[in-house]
Image 1 (cartoon, rainbow, N blue to C red):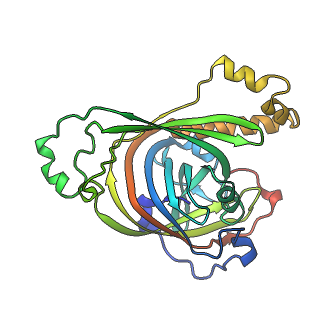
Image 2: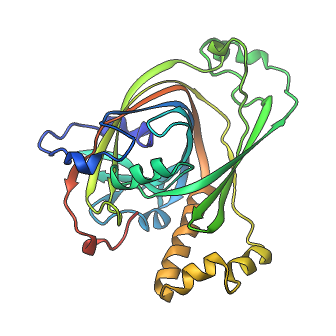
Image 3: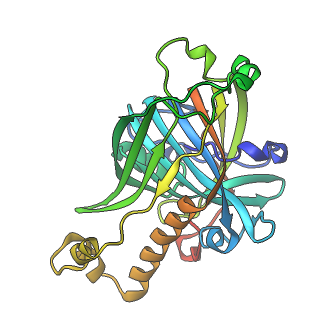
Length: 324
């Protein structure tokens, strides 16, 4: 699930005439009945994304919120320690902000999870463009810089030392998996500290918020949907994570194009237009991740309650022409 409208709460209103989805459409095996509860921690990073890049994922029913050729996108990287699907990680690539009166929310271009159950639930019950992936994590120790005396007040309210060198650095390598094929999606370098003692001094203030989200318009759920997330967490500003794209080296390209390889077999069964569409979508998701970061927020002690989605607009699979 995603925290995808944090900076646009002022546009959020209830829409009383919308009808809830039927029970069989909103529940998947193992998840039980909504609301669904997710607990853990997450990084929400906002980027300036080119409008032309974002439009490739946005359904025609929505208008992209943009200024000077850019919209606000980015990503949401979460690690859940407790959820209906158990322990799992999630990377949500956010294409940009869309406007469908009277609500403005972000739109997910891709959702990667290392849980088959979470993937199926995201696709069928919530209308997310979910895909199974592998998350490989590596922690590296880094010497700390001396604290600045000017950060005294910021330390008191929980956001001091935001841009000091961290104690530890974590690299998260995300590899997308489809059948027998594995392809590196991106690498995220988290350079924020994780102190073990006196956490109340670094996790920031406790907040509560309600975040509406749009989803749907996928092969698994063609309807346009709206659902809400009730959030309780500790939040602080942190130094933006560094994102790197997979190496386009000749070795990887040869492996993917080698006759008999899983990826070659997958593509050989499709026409050239379908293959080009998949590859363009992958490249555009990478472009979103590599765009310029403007703000990074860390959520700790995260308790997220996700409500069942409601149908905003009924669509058939035959009407799917664009968007995620």
